[in-house]
Amino acid sequence: MSNALRPTILANSIDLPGREAPILNPDVAVGLVGDPVEALAAALGADTARATTRALLHQLYAHADYCVLLLGAGGEIVWENPAATQHLAAEFESLRGRLFGELLGLDPRRYENVMRLNRLFAGELTSLKHEAEWHDRRGEERVFEWWHTRLAPGIMGSGEEFACLTIGFEITSQKTEERRLVSLADRDPLTGLYNRRRFEDNFEKILARASRYGHGVALLYFDIDNFKLINDLSGHKVGDEIIQKVSQVLKQSIRATDLPVRQGGDEFAVVMDEVDIDTVNAAVLQFSERLSSVRFRRNDRLNSISCSIGVALYPEHGSNVSQLMANADMAMYRAKSESRSNTNWVVYDPSFTDLDTLSEQVKWKDRLQTALREERLLLFYQPIQQLKDGRITHCEALMRMIGEDGHLVMPAAFIPHAEHTGLINELDRRGVDIALMHMSQLLVQGRKPRVSVNVSTKTLQAGGFYEFLKQRLEYSNVPGELLTIEITETAAIDGVDKMAELLHRISALGCQFSLDDFGAGFSSWLNLRKLPISFLKIDGSFVRHVTDSPDDPLFVKAINEVSQGLNIKTVAECVEDKQTLNTLKALGVDYVQGFLIGRPMQRLHDIFR
Image 1 (tube, rainbow, N blue to C red):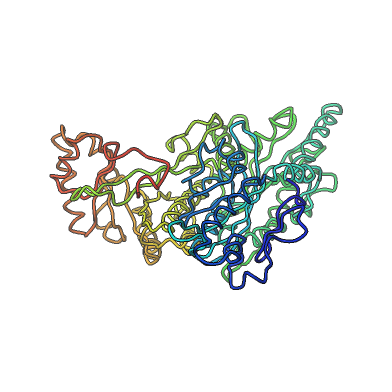
Image 2 (cartoon, rainbow, N blue to C red):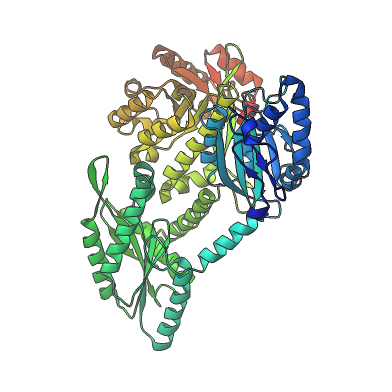
């Protein structure tokens, strides 16, 4: 639908296409929030006209070819016009009763938009505009522009409360054309370097010329170490400045005939034509030395920048673009694993003993980056029951990934690769964001969900997690006491004094901590006393056979009694039958979790009804 055909929402009236004047004169709508529905109500007057207002509203929007929704106070859809049904119901089966946030699909901005919408419901905003995209059942992308306007309480009369009028226009065609025009450009707008499309075209030509005349070519592939962490802590403005500084140093360090490119994000590549290994080493050394003098400011401190560089040579390491890119990527991962805060580079070697491992990591890196970019990471929630009264008091958030074939991938398959490739920090933070988004939606509806989220050792050790969590809690309006951070026993005990300092800072935000898989590592109780732990999860290896093993009940009982002495609640995992539950209850365990209590479910609403 073109802009010319859209209705214009004025301060107190609706201007429809083809009309000489708005439906309402703005002068009759004094004191209203600024919404067309309220203007109609004001025009018609007292409560006796409310039914007429509703009927007029429904008739007015029934023939519109754009989506019109009325949302309740919790963000649920309570009315939709036929156009909304036509546009959306085929993809979402039914609309009424569904949370509007679910219509945002896997849009990368979903978290931010849901948070802003919750602020509108809470009365902090009067209106909101945003875009959202998703893929329909045919796999085709669709983009909508949404306009939300908060309604004053009682505008539709008693017994039928609406919190928000939402109007949506499909702008898929417009966005497709915009992207086509962008893709025609050869240069990255931030750095002035060639973009990926132009790079691949020129790289092919360079290889063809090298094959014809028999000279060597080198590919340098690198990224900025810990860039995602820097970007999250310092903001996108600082991140962009770092990208620009690195590109400037790169251009100063290579020849005019070389082909530099920004691949995307913090990834760069350079093709050096007619070179030998000595020329490559000299260029990389010059780049490394110049980069070591570059600084950026964060928290009133100057910080350095380093990169990990992989080098692949033609024809020794590949005969085409894809082979050389893959081998340079593997060499970069070897460089990253060997790096100690300084810029490091490694030339690809087919005799790498861990070649299969590196190749697998490169593949998983691409899969995980795609999953992050396309919002294909989900949280499922498993309920946790308090044994003394049988109540479901909280739950654990468990991450899943939607694979390329549409099937769910379990965390055991991708978490180890996320840790090896350095992406675990992004996955953990995405998990926190998703959990807080879902919790915020329930808080708007008056419910108080308590959720436990897993965080890796590497994420905690990387730094910046406290600042990230503090910012996210403030932005989502979720009280810290509703969030539990779940860490493993080995994570807590590895460098216990430094870890204790971090956990106490996070605890000051109101958050609690749960120690997972306890008993598997046999950590000392002395170290445990240093940490602000609220829950201790007894490892499933002790729970599974607690009814038929002579030793496991003794371990469970001992862990439980010492935990109670430290004022720490115990949670038994992997509870799958009644006999196990009764045994654990007899042993004094506080909480249980497992398939008997409930399988992981995607909707947090289903646990905290």
